[in-house]
Amino acid sequence: MATAVTGVIDVLNVANSIYKKRTGANADAFSWQLIGVDKKYVESSQGLVFKADVWLEETTEFDVVIWPGSQYRSDTELWQLCKSLMPFHQHIKKLAESAELVMSGCTAVPLLAHTGLLKDKKITASWWLDSFFQRHIKGCKLDTSEMLRLDGKFLTCGATSSFLLLTWYLVRHYLGKDIADTVARYLLIDTEQVKQSAFFALNDLPAHQDGEMRKLEQWISDHLETSIDVSTMAYKLNISERTLTRRFKKLLGVAPMQYVQIARIERACGLLKTTNKTAQQIALSLGYQDDAAFRKLFIKHKGVGMGEYRRNREFFES
Image 1 (cartoon, rainbow, N blue to C red):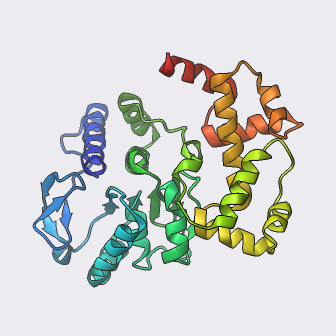
Image 2 (image 1 turned 90 degrees about the horizontal axis):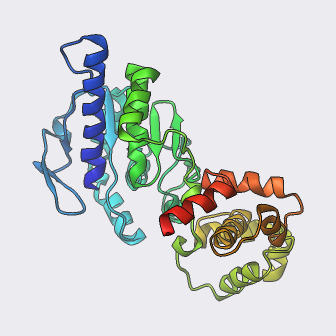
């Protein structure tokens, strides 16, 4: 997307300005070039055109390579894009080998993973791409609940706007925490939001036509106040727990208990917005005798406590 290009440049420009002001340096700390894959220009998903400074085949060495994501439209289209880049895999690998850091985010992560560079690496990607990886790209240690994951020289980030956090890390890596934190304050980059799970929603999970799974999803929704475990769900479908987990991952991109947690968090959010129930009452209504455990789970998923979530929603919806 265009913001993943212009936004990175904006962050680096601000970092350059602060760096020169703090240190008295005349030269910028960061400079950059746009690399075109097979054209003399780079076109964003929205049709904005950027002139490429260099072609991929002409590149030699860069300290850092950043691969921004494009707009997601469908798994089919993304897989076609992955395959279309196969003739350039060797050039991409060569460029990555010479770099100190290789950074990618959003839908660019599967493009990079398809080259084999991320095999056995701890990575993240847009949170809705779990099922895509399950179907098309194996061998990566994917955890889409994380906003950023660093493994060796490879730094990956989640969905669209997480490029801000990605670029903040780049500034911190080269210019230090003080300048990076100043950049974050100027640009309102939330460096505390390190989980994508705050944005998970059941409605955004992949659609499927598995009738048995749809019945199970409805059963889960109807029984959130009870104790639900993997063995019970597997029994409902008359399959093994291992088969159930594979089925969830393939169809929905999440593990069974992760699905249940998302469902409970969504129900809690609805109750916080539409009722005056206390956090303890909501936790009890969702099968948690220990409301402290549910509060902790809520913070893990949403990044804020239940009380703060209610206050924030009241502000934005008033």
